[in-house]
Image (cartoon, rainbow over all chains, first blue to last red; front, top):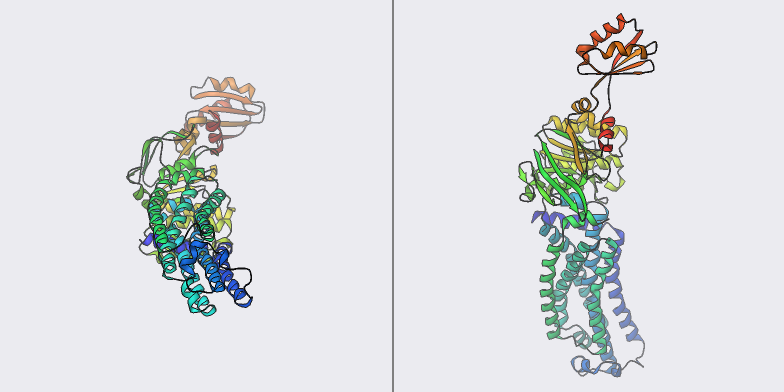
Length: 262
Length: 302
C-alpha cells in the first residue's frame, strides 16, 4: 500500500509540474464550464426567435419540458447537452495523465530503474490508475459543482431543477469514476502493446468516441438519458472496467516494454 | 554470489546471450567486457530479474531467478546504462521515492548519507533537470545504493564523465568492494576494468574467456622479454635459441624479442650469454600487454 502511495504522489509531483499536461488538464474543464455559461447569458439576453420546441426531438419533450415555455424548454435542452459534455472530463483527463505517466517514464528512461525495485506489476498499475483517475474525478466533480452553482444564479428554479435533476448527480458521482477507470485501463493496455509511445497517446484518445455518440444520440433524440439509461451505462462500464483491469495487468509485460519501446 | 548455468536469451531469431556460465564469488568485483550489442545489458537485465531468460538458470545473492524475483529485486542494486531521473523533482525527492520503493527503514538517514557521500548534499533541493551528466550519474549510483544491496550491477558507471567525476566514481566503486559487496561491472573502459576488477569476462554474445587480468595476459601473450642492443640483433639470435628456457627468439632491428616461462629467474643467464657474445646491451625489459590488447585479441578472434 505504501508503494502505491509513493508512486501516486510521485506521479502528481511530476505530472503537475509539466506545464503542458497541467494546461491540458485545466483547459478542458474551463472550456466545458465557460460554454454553457456563455450560452445562458446569450439566451437570457437575446430574444428567442428561431429556436423553438420544434427543434427538440419529440422523445425528450415529455421528460424535460412539462409546463415550460418554449424558450425555457430550449434552454433546458441545451443545458442537458452541456451537462453530458461534462462527462468528457472523466474520460479525457485520465488519458492525458496516464499516457504521460507511462509513456513519460519510458521516454525519460525512468521505467527501468522503477521496474528494478520490488514493486509488483499490480502495485505499479494501481498507482498509475489512481494517479490518473483521482484528478479526473475531482476535476469532474468540482466542475459540476461550479456548473450547478453558476446555473443556480443564472436560471430560474424550474429550469435549474429540470436541467440538473438527481440523475446527473448519479452520473457525476457513480458513472464518472467508472468512465475514468475505463479510459485509464485502455490507455495502459494501448501503452503496453504498441511500440511507439506517440501511437499510445493517439490511440487512447478514441475512448472519447462513446461519449460523443451519446451526445449526438441525445441531440438527435435517438438516446434518452434518464435514470434507467445511466444505471445501465454504470453497470456496463463497471463490468468493462473489471475486464479491462484484468487484461491491463496481464498485458503490462515488463520485458516487452523494456526491450521493444524505442 | 552470482551463478549462472547456460543462461540464454533469445529475441525472435537473434540470440543475445548464448549459454552463459558464470560463477562470481561474494565480495568479488567482476568486470564484464564486450563490444556494443554484445548482450551485456541483456545479461544485467536478466540477472536483476527485469527480463526473463529464454532458458538456463541463475542464482543471484542466494535467490533463484524466475522463482524469487521479488527478493532478487529487493537485494540487488542496479545502475542502468542510461539512468533516467525525474527531472522536475529534486535530488532529495528522487532518492526518497526509491528509498520508499526499496522498503528502506530509515529513508531520511539513507538519503542524506548517500547525497553527502557523493557530494550532492548542497544541491539536494535543486531539480535534477538542472544537474550535469556527472551529477546525474552520481545520483543514479546513490539511488542504486539506498537499500544497501550486497550485490550491485553497474552498467557503464563512468561513461561520459569528465576525468574528475570518473575518478570519484571509481574510488567509490573501490570503497564498495572494500566493504565486501559483490559488484558486476559492465564497462568499455578497459583501463578501469584492469585497475578495479578481480576477474574479467570478455563477452560477445558468448563468453570468450574469464580470468584475472594478469592470467589473461600470460595465457594470451606469454612472458615476453625485450633486449635493446646498440647493434643489429640478428647476429645474436643463434646464441639464444639454443637456451632451454627460451621458447622463441625474434630479431626486430636492434631489438631481440624473447618468449620465456619465467623471466625473473632466467634473465641473469640470458644476459650472461649475451655479454659473453659481446652483445652491446642497452637495456632489458619485460614486454607488457595492455588489457586493450587482450580484449581486441579475444573479441576479434571469432
